[in-house]
Length: 157
Image (cartoon, rainbow, N blue to C red; front, top):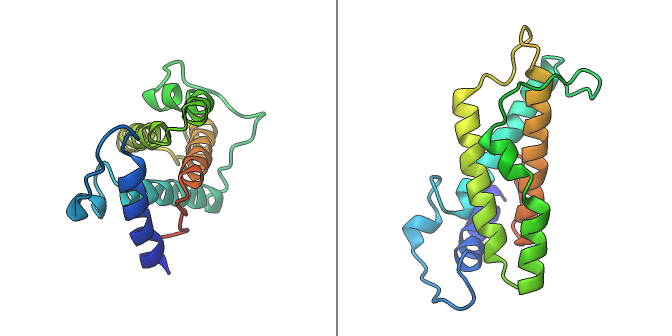
């Protein structure tokens, strides 16, 4: 079942990432890659975020709105997350789904950079609840973006 979901995402994303005015060039190797500009890469990134959320929950670290203490520095991930509603509106009004595909690819890249440079689940860090909330926001936004493209988000890969 996971293989089918990932395979379908490879084809759908390869088509939807292209502008309607341009040619659609399908590259099999790129479409199934778990790195960069592909449906499986986006799904894998969402699954990674979900795994972090499960780890945080198992550790008793959940995003409680009354405990959220945000770091002063705003991350690229936060800046990109903020743009989702306007990207969806733009894609809808122009009837161009590639805007959503491009956006969630950039969002995934920002999340992976954030993940590589930040310890998210740490009981002694006062920013952990905020970081968990940020991962929740990312995961929900990815699921929404993939859904709008007709791509399912598996629970694990």
